[in-house]
Length: 153
Image (cartoon, rainbow, N blue to C red):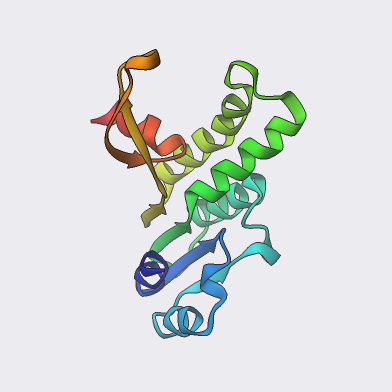
C-alpha cells in the first residue's frame, strides 16, 4: 500500500480510488491533512463514464485541486475489459479494443487538465520474441498505459 499512502500525501489531490485501498483510516487522514478529496466505489470509481465525467469537470471548471490521482488505473481498465468481454467476447482482443476507447478519452482529457496527474498502475511481464521463443525481459506497466508508453518512448 506504499503507492496509496504516496498518492494520498500529495497536496490538494483529487484521489480516485478504484481498489478501495484508501478507505482505511490512515489513508483518509493523510488525504484530509493534505487538503485532498476522495472519490471511491460509492461515487462510481470503477465506471469509466463516471470517472471521465469527473475528469471533464476538473478540466472545465475552476477548483482548488492540484493533482489528480487514479489508484489504480489498472483496476479501472481491467474492469472495463471485463464488462466488455461479457458484451462482445474476447476474440481477437475485442474486450481490449472496447476498453481502449474510454481509456483514450481519459488520456485526451488529461491533456486538457491543468493539474499534475498520477496514474498508478500494476506491473506486468514484458516479453520479447514470438510463439515458443518468447522470454521475459523485464516488467512494464499494465493497461493501456503500456501501449501509450511504447508510443512515446
